[in-house]
Every structure is written in C-alpha cells, then in structure tokens.
Length: 494
Picture 1 (tube, one colour):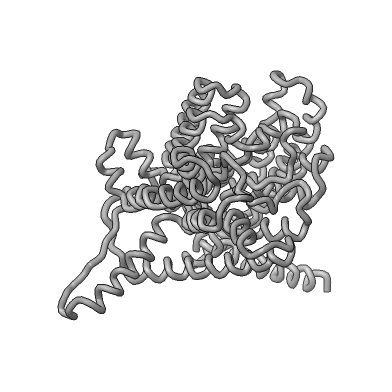
Picture 2: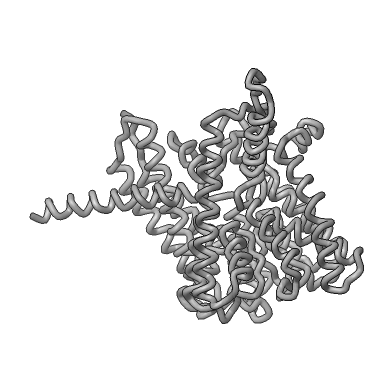
C-alpha cells in the first residue's frame, strides 16, 4: 500500500500561499505612500505560513493509506480543492482587514483574482498601487496554479496526481519538476517581453507590468477604469492581443514555437480551430457593430478583433462598453466566452479542443448516416505531442463535460436573472464570463452589485477554473473525510 502524506502537501501549499500574499510588499520601496497597508499583507501571509507549518508537522505523523489509484486521485482532488479554498480565504483578508471591501466583496475579488477571471467590485480610480499590483499578481500566480508553483520548488511522490488534479494535462518534460520549471521560465520570459513592449508603446511601467501579468494569465484586471480602451492606442491593443493569444495557447504548443517547430505547432488541431473561429467571428462582429452603432467598418473591425480575442482567450480586457452593443454581437461574444481557450493553458471555458471534438463527433455521426456501412473511419486529431485517436473514452469524457458545463451555464444565467433583476441576455453574458473565467461585464458586476449576485458568480468562477468535476468529487470526498473524523472523535469522547 502506498503512503500518502496529504496533510504535508496541504501544509506546503499553505506556506506557499502565505509567501505569495506577502510578495506585494516588495513594491513598497517604489511606492512608500502605501507603507501603511504592509501590515495587512504581512499579518495575513505570516498566519498562513504558520498554519501551513503546523499542518506540515502534523502531516509527518498522520498519513492516509491507499491500495488503489482511484483513492489516491480522490485524495489529490481533496488537496487541490482545499488549497484553492484556503488561497481564496487568505487572499481575501488584505482587502477586508484594510477596509477596502466588505467580506463578500473581499472573497469575490480574491476568487476573481486567483481564478484569473477579472470581474471586479473595486473602484480602481481610488485603489492604491499595492492593491492594484496585488490583484494583478494574484492573476499571474493563479494562471500557473498553486500546485505547479509548489512542484517547481519541491516535488514529492504524489506531485503528479496533484498536478493533474489542478488541470495540467500535459507533461512537457520527462521529469515533472522540469516541466514546472519550463512552464515557469516561459511565463517569466513572456512577462518581461510583454512589459517591455507595453513600455515601448507608451504605457507607464507600473501599468505595463500589471497588464502584462493579467494578459498572459488571461485574467483581465486593469489599473484603468475603462480597461485597455482607456489608452486609445492601437499599438497597445496589438500587444495585448498577442499576449492574450499567448496566454490562451497550450504550454506544450508554446514550447514547440520556442524551439522553432512552427510547422508542427501550426498542425495542432486546436491552434487551427482558434484561428478559424477568429476568421469567422471577427468579420461578423465587425459588420454588426458598424451597422448598428454607426461606426466605420475599419473601426468596427478594430473593436471586433480585440474584443473577440479577449472573449475567446477568456482574458477579459475591453476597448469599449458592451451595454449598447447589438444583440447579435453580444450573442457572438457569449459563444466565444463559452468556447474558451486552449486546454493546458491559463484560459477557461469549455476549451477549444473539447468544442473541436464535439464538432468532429457531430460530423462523424452525419457521415455514418450518409456513407455506406462498409466504410471504415478511424478519426484522429493533432495534439502538440502528435496525432491522437478519437476513441470512445475520449468522446464520453468530452460529451460528459460539455453537457455538465452547459447545464451549469443555463442554471447560473437563470439564477442571475433573479438575483440581479436583469434580462436573460445580460444574465447569459455575465454568467458566461464568470463560468469561463473571462472577466468581461455587461454592467451587472461592479461596486454596487448585491451579495447574492456576487455569490452566484463566485460559484461559477470556482467551478470554471477547477473544471467542475474536481470541485464535485473533491467536495464529496472532503465531506466524507469530515464525517469520518467526526465519528472517530465521537467514539473517542465516549
């Protein structure tokens, strides 16, 4: 039987979260006017580090035992779920302790940050630099994921289970730690290049770093009230589109590109599907905007390209308000937010590969009805690792996930019509944004949004970031562990 030190893993992750919360203090030498806020970050971070240290010590004495792979995976799911909820709670504390936000708003901002969503209840025109940096830094780290960051520093026997449970399907290198380090190095390199590109285009250094972090993590938090649209700069928009597309691309594909294997990267099915969707949706959206809003086709094309890229990549940056957009363009944006970015990237949504597979399955079903029964068809699709067969298990997993995702989308949109008192179109847009961890808003989410609406959106963001089944299975078996512990304590007491 394999020994599983889940408590120790949880402790390590709690310590790491504490260090991440303390990290924004590093900018205080550049912005000394925010020194008064340092105590809230230090206190929160040190409490998480202390709690994690205690759990690590406890984990060395108590261990779970597993005789099968399924049980091991369940414990990994529980650990990932616990870590994310701990991160959300700890991440919310600086907002609340400093008096920036109330409890629900603080939790909402933390969820939106770590899940790389970008919906916000803060007035950025009145927010200090350290909190603006903190929000962007949360998204940058959340895009990588807590487990990936821990594996980069220290790995154990169950690291691969945790790595997979957090939603990282590809192992880029033979060694898991090398995989984590490779992804991190790419992430840092793109951050440096992105920040430099923004500065060259005329954006201030602080804003450049924050926007680069959020573009790469497909997050969407901005230091400006009107997002990227506040700059009215085509070069800045182009840089943002490039960074958003990098963020929504599978890390394995990015590695191929960095190694100069462009032809192999462009053969990947979801990469081709990404550009096909933009090729179809952008002109349609541009026509709708130019005809309905009275702008020229060139201007409509510019807004359509940026906002369609933002929706599909689940980044959440915008160049204009959506409140006056025509219903047709809003419908296209909802579809793009539902589809989402590449699997194994920082993006959310259904993921390009799943939607591609669904369309392939529909096509295969039609072909089977039209072609003679003797025709043999062995469908495949291309991943970064090579050509892969579309078998029954893959189809079953894909259909199951897509069905569950769409059911959640419909349920969440209907709930928002009740809590926000809005029409179905606005509710569908806002919840597609929350569930897909996009961050675009049609005006329902802001400083005055009621708590019930924020709670519905938080549920969507968490389910979307952790891909539904991890939350469901982790939550279920977590409750079983709590019940088992309660029974043991009750018997001991008796």
